[in-house]
Length: 147
Image (cartoon, rainbow, N blue to C red; front, side):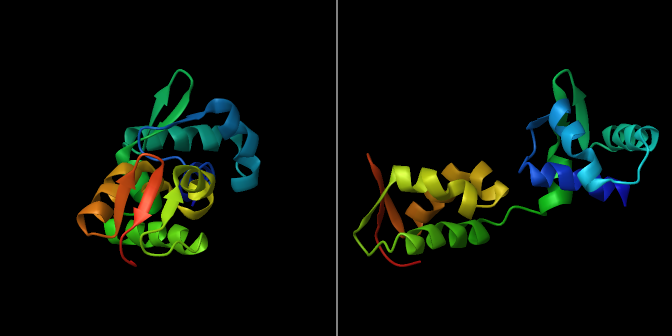
């Protein structure tokens, strides 16, 4: 239970494998996610999570590992991520051969994309190109066909 609550803190901050959550951020929201847990129990569980390979202890905070990422979000699924990208095109009502300016993607990616899609965004966009959905342009993405 406590482990899941701590992992939810990483999810709250949208952290993925390899990203550090500063100690100050972890402390700031600890009571929001683990209200009735003593500092001793909380610290012990963090230590257990290090031993189990979910996180690492770093100078500036706690780093989520790939194993920790998997525990929070599950396995990365490129098809789910492509669906998320398609929703951004729909949000901006982009028509075939229409341009989605890179600024529009940047403006909505934190709101509309999951942490995993955000992490693997270049891979997802490359796959969209391979599948013929989009074409990369200097100033944005061109919708070649509907997703």
